[in-house]
Length: 215
Image (cartoon, rainbow, N blue to C red):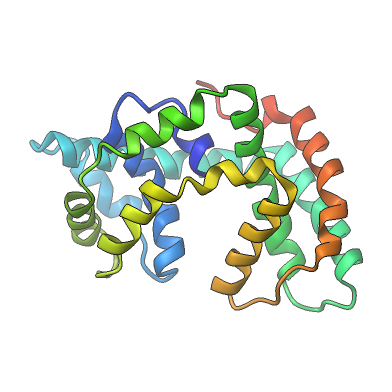
């Protein structure tokens, strides 16, 4: 699951919302830096309400992902997209097709959520704007497996860039996917990848109810 799918029900609590996003933030700035449930769970009842909300959001993220990755709809769509991408990129003997097949499902779920509720994305970013980036950075660094000084630079960019709006546009989605490819040190996806997206969008749309955890 991606940012909107994780956070859509928690926009009323900005620091809980930040917790639902934090594991994905770390995958951007340092893939070896993790927020592990076995550490974070000890802080969900913290006397500090911000720390408690943030920790609960992180735990929500992990619970959502555990549920999501076991769903038949995710497994089937991810496999189908992987095979289509492998055919398009052939010969490609790396794990790029399966990597892209996995994340494509997640990004297209967020695209569907954005399209279905035009107020969701503005509300999401309005809530994210309310967090104190330095404070959230301190909480992440105190709970994660390692520390990073990149958080105080990254979080204001996340607040300002609003890149989640790009997912509903095929060309912008490809651009964002290729940013992920660069971070993962994988070859960029070609423009021909765009030909797969209309069908992929329809398939995710058809199975959307099976891709979202019960509210």
